Amino acid sequence: MKLRKSPITYVLIVISACIFIYFALAVKSGETLRFDQNISSFLLGLLKENSYPFFKALNVIGSFKGIGLIALIVIFLLWLKKRDYLGMAVFTLTVATGALLNDYVKDAIARPRPETPHLVHVKSFSFPSGHAMMGIILYVLIAYFLVSNIQSRAGKWLVMFLAFMMIIMLGVSRIVLQVHYPSDVAAGFALGLAWVLIGLIIYEFFRGKWRKSNHT
Image (cartoon, rainbow, N blue to C red; front, side):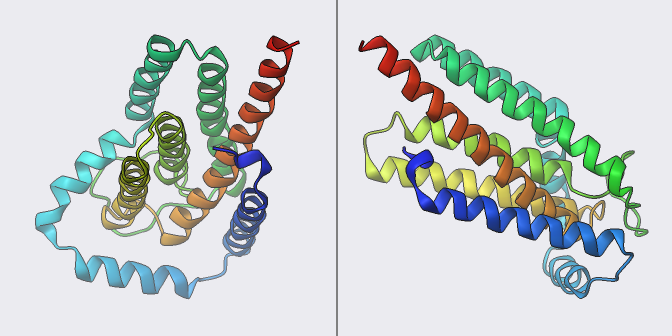
């Protein structure tokens, strides 16, 4: 994959940054967002109590411990299959710095959680959603490295579809479990996408440099 050379990559980064900034400014100003009301009403009306165990399981998978465990498995596989030390480093740094960035923004915005009863325990601020942000960082990274090593077009599309569905379900879970506003989730997705694309651009840049140095 050549994300670094594709204009679409940079357009996505700019759009994602704009979306994040919009929601950050709106939340910081104390504005009541119709977006939050409409999306929450739709999802809570659509998904009933029998779906809660599924979304509670996603809460564990998308927690920092769950993300950390999955990241360690992927890093081990990058070492075992390809000895891709640059990939291991970029994967680790992108996930770790993404988590730090999420904590920093949460404290800077300091948005309280929704006042509705939470279906899982939470203790940090609300904006942006850590599950949404870290989920998109993790699964975009996983999809990138898998797709880069799959020859079949159908296989590539399957990996991207599964990663997309996992990311969406993690975001939806935060609203259904009533621990985040939809704007928290949207901002988490936007910031996470920009962050992971920057990480992959850095990876491709240094991988190109590494290959050139090995051919000289």
